[in-house]
Image (cartoon, rainbow, N blue to C red; front, side, top):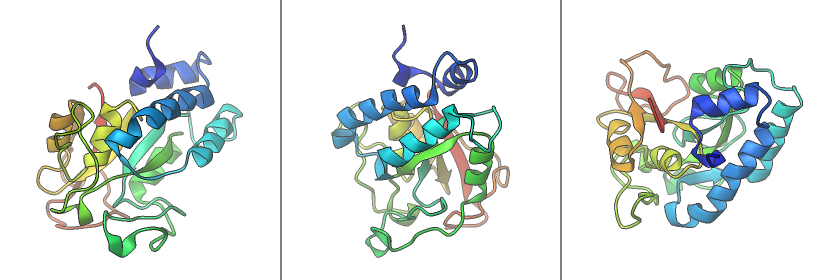
Length: 215
C-alpha cells in the first residue's frame, strides 16, 4: 500500500471523495511527514497544525462550503499571496510575525477554497519574490538550493508535505524550483490565473503557477 504522503493530488481527492480515506487521516499522515522533515527542509513560513486539523475535520463532517472537486485537499500557498486572517510575510523582516495580516484572500485562494481544498500553510519565498533567498533547503540534498523564488512551494510538494502548492513567476520562479526539486511546475499564460491579492513585481510578467508531483 502506498504511503499516504506519496499520494498524488488526484488519487488523494478520489480516495477522500469515495470515502476510502478521511481528510483528517490524510492530513495526519502529512503532519507526521512534516514533523520529521521540516527541520531540514524548512519549507513553511507560517504553519499551524491545529488550525489545519480543525479544517480537515470540518470537511469530514460535511461542513465545507466547497464542492467535491478538491474536497479535503491541503494546499501550500506562497507567502506573497494573501490568505484571509493569516500573515503575509513576503520573506521580509519588514512583515515578519503578525505585522501584515491579510483582510481578505487572493482570488486564487478563494477559487481553491471554493473547490473544497484548504490552505495548510504559507510557504517560504525569496524576499519580496526577488533576489534574497529564503531559508528553504532542497529536499533531496540540504546542501543544494531548491531554486527560487517559489522555493517553499516546490520543496513542500517534493518532500511530501502537500500534494500541490501555489507559486508565482516573474522570470523563472515556478519552472526553476520545480526543476531543481524534481516536481511538476506549470506556468500558464499571462492572465490565466488572477493575480489579485498577490504581491506584484512586474504586472506584464507576473504569473501565478502550480506545483504537483505529477502531470
